[in-house]
Length: 562
Image (cartoon, rainbow, N blue to C red; front, top):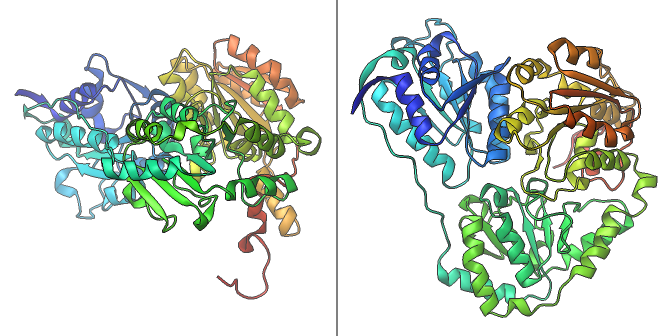
């Protein structure tokens, strides 16, 4: 054992777990922790301009690196500000550790008005964290860090919280450091794997539904091997985009929607419903099992609460996605699953129907999305905000490399994309990173341009400017007889970027993004592109078009019947 402060013990424990960077803001209750990070070789802190950005950046770092991201904030309001980033990470099952200060030990729970005091602080983020612990003295820090990383590496990865009173950060005592948290991948029993293999091998029209759990398990290669070895086609959820290349002949992509109004969309849904066996891998089935109760669901999930939630006719495979696929595949081959004919022609025909049938003529979003994609290297990361084009990208963006499509999941955090993209770039500085945001969302965290310039985080940000909260404006105009207070007063984004020392560009034609984005990437500097977007109608085949038919999005007479 070695005598050290709580801040030093915390910093050394983070390094032992492989942490290289912490995103945070120094503050009075965390001086001991900040000093510990400062004095620890191999560990650095990137200071943001708002606590909200700390957890967003940690989220992006985790997604791009495959390792947990770490954020540091003061207690109370600092935790509240950081909570939105935790919510986004929670919705996409991202491992983020939030380290928060606390008020002095003797004042906790006494409601005496200490600086930044919030009663039951850990409970504030309880709904969006998997695990929480308070470190009250230095010797408790190694165990807390060990358990935090064990929690993030086992089961379903989600955010966790460690909080430390200010005294614990500076007090010194004998501390026993711990080795890194090691985990073993869970694999279902051989008997249930064999049962599943038999059902899949004898299926007439099996289908794989791949979710974000594939990426969290680094199971992309295993998924492709499974599809190719068995000739079973794949649909991905929006969270699973990139887990199999959208260009793969066995990939339907993630253009699946049960409520499309186009005839060709309904035809594809009929194809999906005809599947007799659905193999779910790391997905919550937020839109439900596309084949319904008539199919057998072979459900692979590390979260056992998700295994039988969808339907009764389920073979639950509780296990890690990669390890389970690797254990299941030899049994499938032994059962004869590799003898199935390739459905590649049928997949290609269905993809043409759902994604490319007159799309350029009927949907003005598609050419813009296409221009953006052509401007980004195929292995580049693109981080989408909640915007009119961001919704559209969930179905039509083509992802051909693992983990390169990033969005906030079901939490739909407006303002998420810019700081998250900065975290992605910190994790993968050698790769291109492009953020696509609306003008409304970008301004939420636009002050982080300061962070980008200071640390040389060279993200290219495309602002699709229509001087309004465009989605809300469209909804109110379309269903409530007129918009209200959705117009925005924006700065000159080019001059705004230049005032921070970044590069500003402008175009009145978003189709020029095909050439502007490569030029911006070549500059190797933080770049903001102001692109006039204009008003865009909601395409009828759009995955979220059904939102406009929900009863609570329409004026009502009387009560809504549930």
